[in-house]
Amino acid sequence: MDTRPIGVFDSGLGGLTAVRQLRRVLPGEDIVYFGDTGRVPYGSRGRDIIVQYARQDIRFLLQQDVKFIIAACGTVSSTYPPEEAARLPVPFTGVVGATARAAVDATRNRKIGIIGTAATVRSWSYAAIIRDMMPDVQIFARACPMFVPLVENGRVHRGDVVIETVVKEYLTPLKDAGVDTLILGCTHYPLLEEVIGDFMGPDVTLIDSGAEAANLASTQFDPNEGTGTTQYFVSDDPQGFDQLAELFLQEKVNVGAELVDISRY
Ligand code: DGL
Image 1 (cartoon, rainbow, N blue to C red):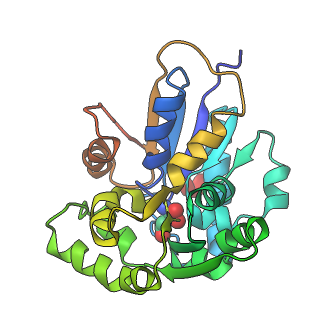
Image 2: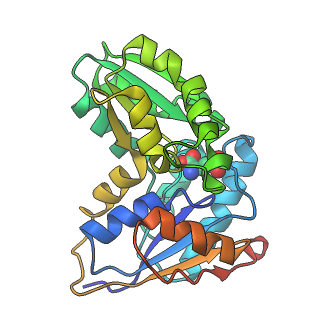
């Protein structure tokens, strides 16, 4: 039995959607989470910067002696070179493959919507895998760059006129196209599940990329027994992270995030 923790990272709060699911499916595992709150958002940056940030995040997690790394970030998963991931000393997974598979399984009319950051949509990562699995699929993709800053500011609730207006603006073309499955291709977006679900309607299946990555990871090793712990690290504003993390994790937890100088890694 390998008792080392699982490492999870994202640019900020979004990867907590993967942590929430990991806690459900692997309650006995210890988790080390890193949120790069000092440099969020990643999704509007160029490829080289995203890869550099991902390398530093991974080095930090490796120093915590993790046994497995989840890039709980659609942007990193779409950008970090797979050949580099394959050379890491521990297994690594992103969110794209598992999420694409779940969307293919869910669609009935073969019209799939993909929303993500600008970097993710530009990379065409989800679409390429979906097309391989379902050649006659129709794909409708849209970058939603305003979602991440709104989520990081806690603007996620039903009845919040700002987030409801932005959701309508971004998602109207996908709704009009008649997608029956919508990939929330950035791990921040499941925090908007209620508002997005209200707008798209009950017949559209929303696919949570953070949760799908956690489900995939849970099949990769023999789980530990008991109750695992989660340690949180951020690169800025630990107190702000603590407050919003409770909201995201949907439970009363003592987050107690610690500050890391990520530029040292
Ligand atoms: N949550 C991340 C993603 O899944 C990053 C969002 C961002 O920092 O722009 O893409």
